[in-house]
Length: 316
Image (tube, rainbow, N blue to C red):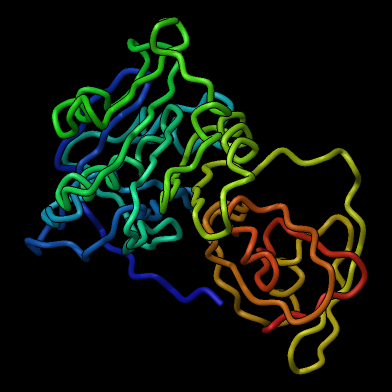
């Protein structure tokens, strides 16, 4: 079960724009010189004035705790959070921001690391690249984008990563294009793969890396995967104490659990942040999240979006 996260009222220390309609925001604590530590792959929750919460990856240097850096792409078809940030936030503004949380950690390994990013998916990957450079570890970063002129944070990458590790791929430059299937066909000995990007990119990398061994492929998604058009069916949840919780077809499992009196923390309620993650003991879940690994799906459940067939017994 998720636990409450510390909320800090941080000050916007700087704002600048990047290609691709991306705004980079630096946040500092108004009184303390250092912020809580974070690891590469971490994200924070940004609390908006309307009560909604949005998650943004920390793309700054994990060794520099004087500030947090996030990069926000304006999503014209989004839920309004990115537009509010682009239209409202300026230096000196105050933003309620959570302590960092990490569902996408950079794991210790002896082999090389392969980083793949598509568009704004570069944000958690950038923090990983910074750490790998500092560790002097062998890695390659393949950055896929429509055009150099639309690629955010590329200048930052080119400053901190040598050309032997950075591989930009632009749709409008034939000589830079890279086929993902070919790239992932042969796995170097001991290699670990990390990737993040838009839904089409995520699906392509997932398909191309299906033959990689369990535990060697790691990802973070900013949007849930596309769902089929099948109408949702009602199902039943059973809690540890035996309480039976019906979940109607038009209600989420999260809402039903809360209505039954269980305080279950949640944030995005869109299947991408993992805050409401819980365990299940028996049953057949229908996973619709973009958080859990294939291995975790055998025992974990994201109730804000996922459903089940028949009866699902939760570890709550």
